Image 1 (spheres, one colour):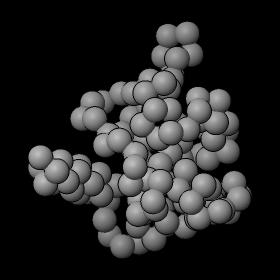
Image 2 (cartoon, one colour):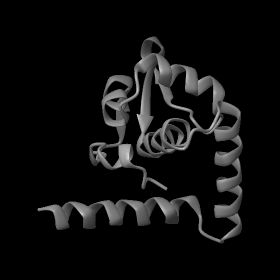
Image 3 (cartoon, rainbow, N blue to C red):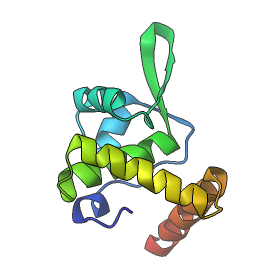
Image 4 (cartoon, one colour):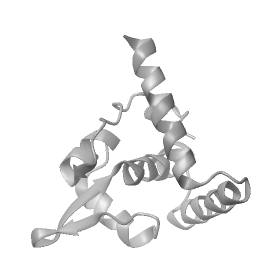
Amino acid sequence: MLEASNNNELKPIPAKRYFTIGEVSELCQVKPHVLRYWEQEFPQLKPVKRRGNRRYYQREDVMVIREIRELLYDKGFTIGGARQQLESSEESSSESGLSKETVKLLINELEDVVRILKA
């Protein structure tokens, strides 16, 4: 999923619950206005909005943004094509019997292993 060359250069996602739009912009190397646009185009992307309409992204949102970035920038998909690809990958993962929670736990564990191996 995150094997493209540009995604390998992205910083690891810190172990915290919420990220501001500025932090996500830096983590995903995407400008904030692009993130706001993607929110309108991709229903999977729903940051929590709090005081003053400030956005707070969760780890899952950051992973979706990285996947969108890979589809658009590395694989050359259009917005519509990327949207379809995300929807079909959601359907296939739900059909495989793995719950989203299980997938999240596996990803977190794998990221921890990567950090340990890099140390």
